[in-house]
Length: 148
Image (cartoon, rainbow, N blue to C red; front, side):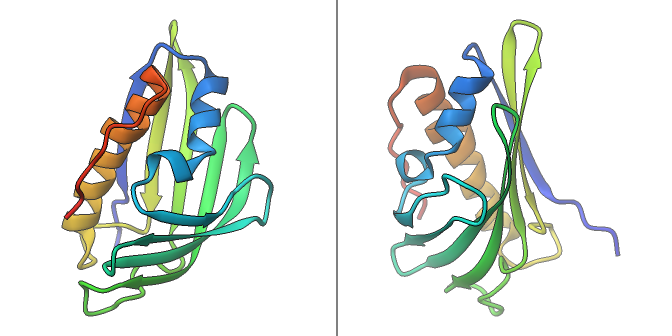
C-alpha cells in the first residue's frame, strides 16, 4: 500500500540560515515541554504535550542551511489505539532558495491517512509550522497555539 506522508510548506523573506536556525530550536516554536536539544548528529530530545503526547526524537541528518531530519525513536500518543504510531517515523525540514525568498518544506514521513492520528496530528503540525514556526522565522516571536 502506498502511503502519502503529511507535508506543508512556508515561504519567508528571511535567509536560509535564519530559517535553519529557527528550525533547529524546537523548544522555542513547538508548543509543549522539550528536554534536550538537537544540536549535532545523534543528539536526542523529548517532547511532551500535556498528558496527550510524548515522543523522543534523534537528530539523524543535518545539512547546515538546507536540511534537518529527526527520527522518532519512541512515542506515546494517548488518544490512539496504537499509542506508538509515531515510532519509526521521520520529521523532515528541507530549506531552499526560491527567487528572493526561502522555502521551508516540512514532511512528517510515516504520518499518513492510513494511521489513526493523521487528522489530529496533521492539523496540529499545520498550525505549528504555518503559525508558530512561521511567526518565529518572520518576527522573532512565537504565536501561542492551543492544540487541544
